[in-house]
Length: 188
Image (cartoon, rainbow, N blue to C red; front, side, top):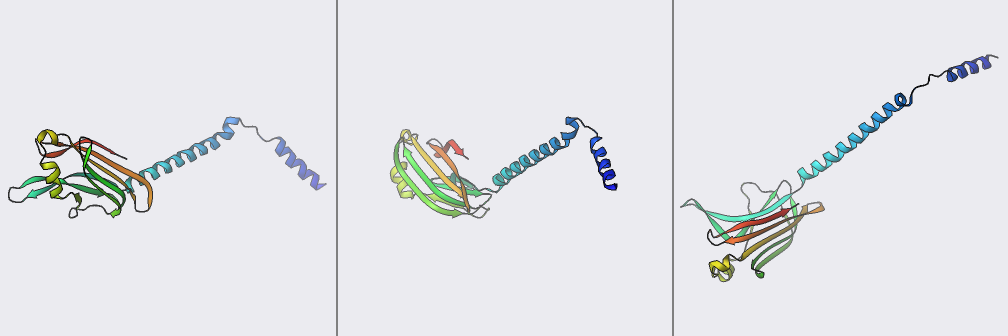
């Protein structure tokens, strides 16, 4: 008999359970789901930021030597300076090409090398021989020199592989200044 009383009390409590509106009952669940989605989006943004801040950046630019007596920069038409920033890079392919209009005059390609970030005392460059430059470029008239283009293509990744990055540079030769001028740069 005592069992029945206990069951009746439980039944009464369940029967008399207060009814809540749907909105009040599920509001905490919706808030928790929104917080979860915001957290996941924050993790995604953090991962993207980490990748961008820890990936290597590689690019090329004109090379010049400093004349210590005259204290001026002397452009080196035959050389290209390369820079690595932020993290070591595995260079998949480097191509440096000089064209006269659409005809290839000089071409250099190197594959699969590793380079580390620059500091103020290191330098990484490529130069065509001065004899090749003298025979094929310096003998040209100023009108022909204005048709010279230098193309630099780099493909690289982080040391552990992963995404392949690229840097492309197109330059034209300015006979008046005797220097390579930047026409177009593209990178990812």
